[in-house]
Length: 450
Ligand code: ADP
Image (cartoon, rainbow, N blue to C red; front, side, top):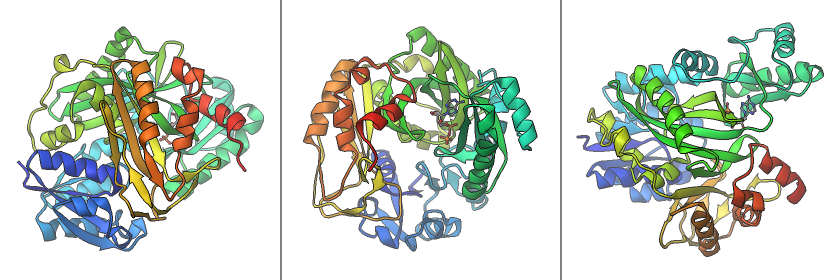
């Protein structure tokens, strides 16, 4: 059993991990930049270490500073949360070279899945269905034009190192190919230091369905059903739910088994998410995330499990505390991402919180690091909270979301809360009939950028 773990992250996800550790009787170490000295994760952890100035490359992304913080405090393991160093294979290698444990998958699994081309090849070999596209990287514009013609337009050009919606460009017709190809390459180069791109058929009406998997690293793995994250803005999720309103129990069992078998075969350890586009009853793999997802609480709500606790257990070499047959879906859960952003442009809106009141009551979970008087620094992600509701069925969860949003008070900064109030007025949101483009269209007609 670990005595102490360090959380290499900030904000709500750092609190999430501290809470799980505390329930397990494990001590917690927070790390923070000078901009976060007053942050909630620093207050809540058992110990804290300042690791550098506000800019993330010198603090939350500084591997030497984080390793030093472990050595100073005697932390034996590191939980990376999501973002920052969570999918950095080099970091995992260094952690292990220092005799510490990384709470997450191996460096090798992160490396394979972090490159979207090798990820796709690996998944294809493991029997996971993929989006039709180029066989590997596409080096030149001439290749891209030939492949575009073969697959048929529209196509999407993706940076193999891409993430967070960056490095993807759609070519509707052959005439768009040159600029889409050049832009995807340039974005890959400038954001991820890698200009390799590949091409996929662009699906026009898919839903985003992702399967939560969990492995023990010894050839055993389970799936925890799907999350539907189809309401997206600029390829970024804003509203997530489980189970998916369009997925039948038979489809869930079938694709869930394909995913659990795939990760079992590679001895995957810990939490992972296999993302698919889902169109006309078919699943198409797009990528695998080798970490805890922002939206993991909806899965926790319907299965009644603590995924962070489970991550810590398997990192310690303990068996998983549940098998596939123990996992049964109970009700419906929805998460909305509350960002400090000003509508209609979604421009970041850092500042001081003059009043904060979290909603409560049956079936309501608010994961947030806010408090009265807290100043949101301008240096990091704009996510300031996640409101998760759980009900016996989808209509009950939606009614609960409406009620909980009404109780939430975040004064002092603008947030995305008005967007969710507006979405809850929409018949399509209530019927669950939308695809990944629905929100973009809705925003164009309902929230004109200034
Ligand atoms: P990232 O790593 O940047 O999150 P993903 O490959 O996961 O990129 O894709 C993010 C989103 O982009 C998907 O949820 C979907 O909305 C859109 N997308 C990706 N691939 C395709 C495709 N082949 N056709 C249509 N939309 C796509």
